[in-house]
Image (cartoon, rainbow, N blue to C red; front, side, top):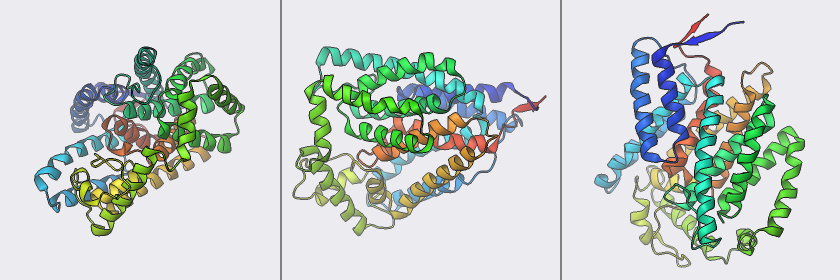
Length: 390
């Protein structure tokens, strides 16, 4: 059996990467750590201590970058659109993940992000105790916005659920189950519906794929939660399908406005950061708010802002991810099936929640999203050059 020993620069870069993603709840700290990791990784590449294996995931990533630049250059307000391209640097995470992530390092990542999430949910629980459960005082944890907190925590929950369902080390359940209990409580009273729907669809998929007895407890927990949690939670659940509810009506109006933007600018969109500038011109009569910062729907916002080709690259990225996961789950010799399950559930949850919230444009959530999108490809590519065969 072959074993591999990491070299110093490569191992250091991997450590920065894992920590940077795990602390993405603190975006400034995360960007700093990821930046350091990127510099160390470049040094490792230059010295032959790391390599990047080829994978089809680079097609949509490159396409997204190129079409974003085209959209910004052709924007009616280039001084506003061009600076918005600085977040494209975050996409350098993808080749880093392919170069640096191994099954052992995925396990370290689980522990790191579990610790971060406990801190955030602990803070949120304190906020809930102090301010109560209502729409005016929704807990943000350590994040700047409650929606970001809920979306990020949802991703962590689904990552940990994947480990529960497919992991091979029962000892981990001793700390994963209590953490999931904390997150479930906090998310239940967060009143954030897109996170609820994302988790429900992801767990439904898990039940279809793996028929795990552990998932049988979920419907029972939902019934108990609806019975004992504050009435604000029950009212919020009922409101999901109520088109007369103000937030729902506003989302429909945003979709209509975004569709009009796409009709007028199908190829390059209105330009990065221009949706919020032009929204008053496209606002539908039934809209609740006069201005919005985004359109609360990933596909609509992407196409309106950067054009249908950009939406196609987003879709292709999801397809390539799905192919990698399916191929890996069918391989009985795959080194990390639990990582594949975790990434699949997280991406499904994030994608479904992204139909009702623009989480693709939320930096904290985007970092975790890109990481879980790239991990299956990394596990296909294999060990980096920074690993010496023993």
